[in-house]
Image 1 (cartoon, helix red, strand yellow):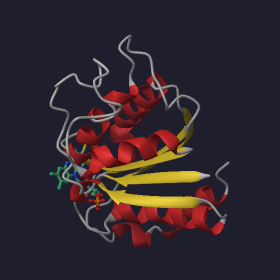
Image 2 (cartoon, protein in one colour; image 1 turned 90 degrees about the horizontal axis):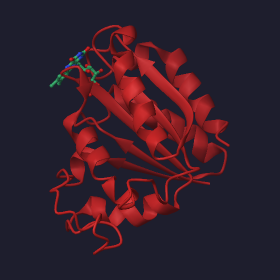
Image 3 (spheres, rainbow, N blue to C red; image 1 turned 180 degrees about the vertical axis):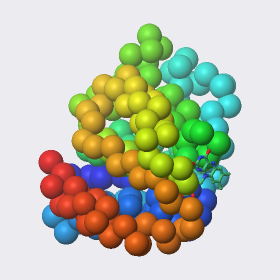
Image 4 (spheres, rainbow, N blue to C red; image 1 turned 180 degrees about the horizontal axis):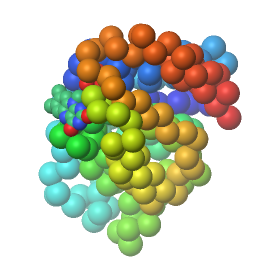
Length: 184
Ligand SMILES: Cc1cc2nc3c(=O)[nH]c(=O)nc-3n(C[C@H](O)[C@H](O)[C@H](O)COP(=O)(O)O)c2cc1C
């Protein structure tokens, strides 16, 4: 299977990245094709509301950036993994820009195309205890559910302040790797 993972933290190799990387490590061990992208390194400007995708003037997006180049690959992937730190009570800006840029996966009648039937996993890391941001997981599930995607897991971890805090929670990283090994 083809798995595309997107990390929405600008902090290189921080908590979110370590968990996403652990899932991907497991997936690679099971023989899957895995690509990992750091959304903060991809220009990743938000949607500019030109409506070219909705008017079907282009296959995907008129914005000339790295993310547009990835959209056809997303259409071919089997799994999407999206990880975000909580920023100001919500997904990070880089993550939100990415989600906005998935508008080309909506037809003019606002039903989904390309994505229905694919699976997704989300990863959410916060400084506060995990239970504080169940709304963000609900948001992710509502979002990907709207696109007809199937939930393959939500990893939600709190009490993570410094970028290496997750290393002291090795069980979570082991579980993430195990989740990656068992992707189906
Ligand atoms: C700009 C900014 C805003 C943040 N806002 C919140 C917040 O609202 N609630 C919270 O619990 N943690 C907040 N945090 C802490 C991060 O969510 C937390 O440290 C997370 O583990 C960072 O993940 P990372 O290591 O992958 O970057 C914020 C951090 C930053 C830099």
